Image (cartoon, rainbow, N blue to C red; front, side, top):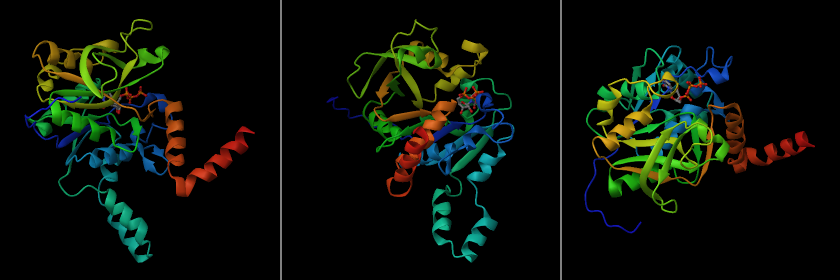
Length: 300
Ligand code: UTP
């Protein structure tokens, strides 16, 4: 797009991470361990997503947690005994990287969704912490692997035109029923106004094969609609329903930001397995060659 936009839009400072789901597709692994703490190579899934948000300049991380999720809070806290032991054993590199991952004091907030009533409800639980400013929303089970962080590109698009942004990428036609799907005015553009939005369309009815990849920039007025707590598809309070109302009733702009990198849906077993392979292969100096050799051996 070559438009010139003079308006300065409110900075995206905060990001919401909904981590209160039950993770039933990963039972029994998720009986006592939150699915967001399952590891992709040697970092919990949630850490990869927080890394993406930090690289995009996010200053405050808001986690919507639930029962059995306290370990997520511990993960982003200081671990005094561990740090002390690492220092005494001269494990300076490990200590340095542990410290680098830890958000500074005051940069995290945790709120609870007492019952997993749906993604829309989880986001609504963050309303008081977000207040009256636009914010990013990152679904932790979707991992985006690319040289440029997905959210970083979205913030650039937002800085140009403001409004609400939803990240999208094509999926095979036979998978559209598993995702939120949007139709866009211009599929070639890096971002384009959205003309249709539908949550998990029945097989064969999707308006396009552009699926929502779990990254959003939303205006705070979304909370007015989420607060009505109306159940949608699957009996859950759906974010997509409120986004549609924000667009149709308040006339706010919605843009689809096209993503061209790799996406791994760690909410599914196959996505989780391929994420481990992809992130290991991306560590070229350390793991990639050995993993390739092992895979060749296993595949015969
Ligand atoms: P999912 O539907 O993929 O997560 O929600 P889930 O419900 O934990 O997974 P399954 O289907 O039972 O295996 C996407 C994201 O939204 C969060 C989840 O934690 C996940 O990160 N979520 C979902 C909530 O925080 N609260 C909810 O009520 C629903």
